[in-house]
Each structure stands twice: as structure tokens, then as C-alpha cells.
Length: 126
Image (tube, rainbow, N blue to C red; front, side, top):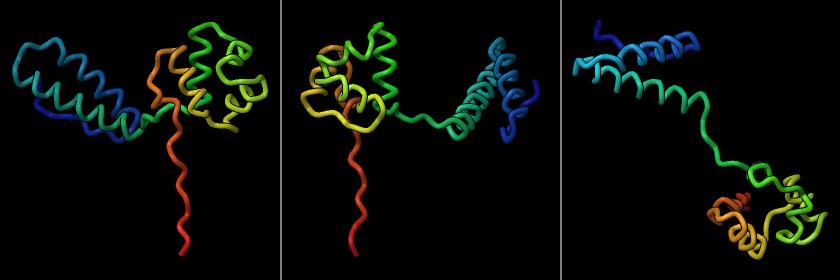
């Protein structure tokens, strides 16, 4: 195979680069294996730029956990306090107290870091 790499700038380039990687995966040639690694890095860099990862919001995380554990909003009441509090948290209008974080952590066995919101940035007075 020729020793070129595809620089990804468009969706067509991205599709072509992925096809190239599939072809190179079948090769035992060390030069092709090096090219495969380089092209895969280019694809990864493009995808990270195009579709950056972000941590889920608290409502997204709780909705996912409810879905995975087949729970309703009512099932969260013992963990969050009241039905209205569950609604506020799931609508993103309220954060979690440390007590809620502990209960959710114990119930779902997930890192408390996922449940604690990052501090809000405050504008500094000049």
C-alpha cells in the first residue's frame, strides 16, 4: 500500500480514513501497522474535536440510572427526600446535598464525584 495518510477535514475525509484503517488492519506489514497507528490517531483527534466528551449533567445521570435500574421518580423519594425535590433535581433546578450524595452513592455504587456539581464560577468584583 502507498504510504500516505488522510488528513481529516470533512465528513467524506473521515469516512475515507475509517475505510483505510479497516484495510490496514488486515496487513501484517510493519509499515502498514505503523500507518494504521498514525491514521487511527488522526481519526481520534478529529473525533475528539468534532464530538468532544463531556461529563453528564446530574439530571442526565439520574435519568440513566433510573432507566438502568427500572426505577420511577417515586423510587427516588427515599433517596432525595420528597417528590417535589426529586422533580427539582431531575429538572436541573436543584443540586444535591451531601446526604443525598451519600444515599445515591450507596444505592447505585457510583463515584460521588459524578454526583457533586463543580463549583459555579463567580465574577470577581473589580
